Length: 434
Image 1: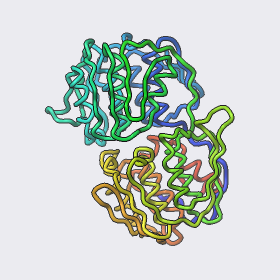
Image 2: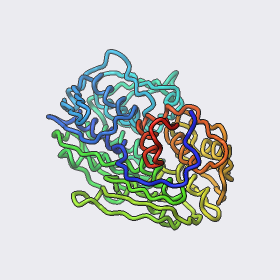
Image 3: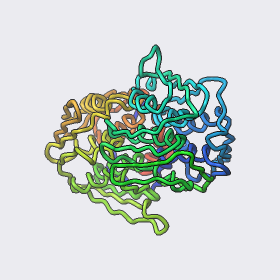
């Protein structure tokens, strides 16, 4: 697909799609709660649709009228054994969190997905679940999907020190712990996004969080709720960066989620001298309006405890760094290797094709700015965040065209990405986009 290039100004106001992490979890908690849960502004990307279908396969009635998703919860005990394997598509969140939910169900389930999912390691979830008494294994005893999960109604409580900073692994253990008899303790390596912990409380449960130590008891009952999903800061990130690096630009993004465990990118933008303002919503301290404008950027170093708070934004931050004066170093980001693709290698290889001076390392990237980008043929590797990052990069290309292979992957998290981008580029109907 030919991307939009050579943009001299970006102007406009957008509301980005609902937060993907919260959308997944709202469906999950709605299903394991008793009563009705209504979800507003949910993300209808492919990944979240996979989660909806997974719970329909498990016997949960979920209605979607295009505006509101209604989940008729069954509680944990109402989930039914599936006839066929559950297909999670491209969704790592779905497969990992479903493993925790199925851990306490007294039946066997097979979880599978697309070619990308088949290459993603699941041992990090299987190890703690096995300690809790779950029988789980991948193909031929490996750690890769398809996975066979044989749950048990007698889950053991554990104290688990996380070897990796991963909200998905933590959430899988939490879902299993909610079905165990007693209190499970999780000790995080670094603090990660806390949507699962917050939703336990929102749906009427109890959880104790003391810095990096989390304690949760089993046999809790959840009650259906009304959920309003804020805009996804990971989706907003592409427009934040576009507004900072394209000349003569100002972009405003409304109703963006501002959960502190997700806002690392805002700190990085400020450290890089980006012009950004935030106005928190009157009805929520964790959502607000963000405005960015073209900025003279400086390099920075990114590593340590901030990494889990911006792990999904690192590809677009790498692009931001190509337009900053000096050398930016990203470290402690090994987790990028086990996303939809190896994002360290993918970012370095594809941005280099467009003229960026960028070197991959074992745990991150070294980016030397400021560089002028040129045309070329690039690929998303089937990774939605790589695809969107490359389109924002293409906006800076003045000479030549940029062709993106596997552009369809973007629909995983942002089905209207090209349409929204065309709007702030002020393209007329019929001009090339999406």
